[in-house]
Length: 184
Image (cartoon, rainbow, N blue to C red):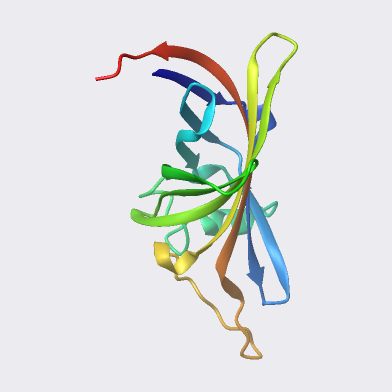
């Protein structure tokens, strides 16, 4: 078996989220600092093992006051839980480009199994002879499942913040090395 290691190209990758505000619009945000590594058997994407970390302190919604509040115990509790992590358990092929990604998301010290959708963009050689691959991931989680239970009611009795969070990530990986392993 040949194991291939891939590292993320942060300049061509992004992690975004969005949540309903006042139930009539969306607030979007992103993580500016993150890392992801992938291991595959050869170039077989269906064998991928993924580990992602995102730094809570790098959260940005283009509003400094809101970002500071998101880092507090009302939301991500960055002082006690400076990272969120995702580790895949398996990929299930849906068709030639689409997969279901099963894994564990850990946020605020709470770990939950989730299922995300992934679209495999394929492989390409860059101008330096490096092999790259692209993957887009999307899904939804309930923030309260991870202990993010902050809630407010508007002056008119409406809910200010939705519970469902939509996740979208686009990632480009660069093949780093191929390791030959001996089957047991």
